Image 1 (cartoon, rainbow, N blue to C red):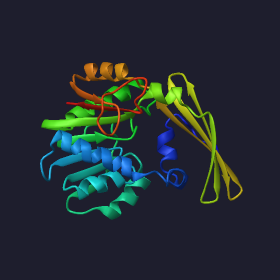
Image 2 (tube, rainbow, N blue to C red):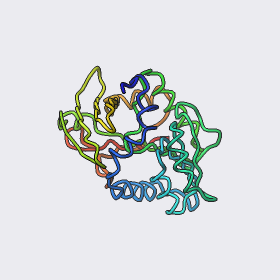
Image 3 (cartoon, rainbow, N blue to C red):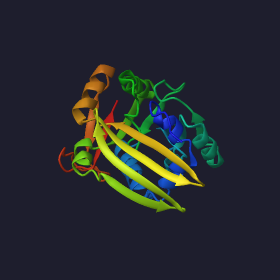
Length: 243
């Protein structure tokens, strides 16, 4: 099975294989970031948060346990259908294109764990920043948690094999035309599958240009989930606070 990679995320994220490959991701780092960020931003009790590109909702669920009113939004219909089992009075999930403004505003908008830079069309990156700005209320803040592209490229593992739930995933990583690319191939039940992840290797300077074009103000930049100072050479993450 060969997939069209022009919008790779619309097909790959909707497959059960995506969730199998990444099933062992550790939630502790994610929760640590959300604890620190919500405290740092001083989001009011029962404040509203939009979790943009929420996937199956695990981070939205955790934010809700902290006492926030959370809306999880994602383009993947299958992921949202799965997440809806966790809904309650203060936790909701919707299918939504993050390039477009949501029809309400929030105390905070979170775009976490490198859920940005997927688009082939450059204007969609700018449109997403503009949409995030439109989604903020007057006192709201936005957070984009992205990979530190320079660090990732310098520490790229070119080839790797992982066997999970009886499926052997062959992974190849490389840089191509300004994107960090991961080719994913495997065979299950006698059928070959090939998928690809492509994420734009945005630097801080690239984001600063997007923020300027979208007329948003960059307030703080951190390099890890402990909210330490960002270093282009050594930081693993690029966490940006803006409004």
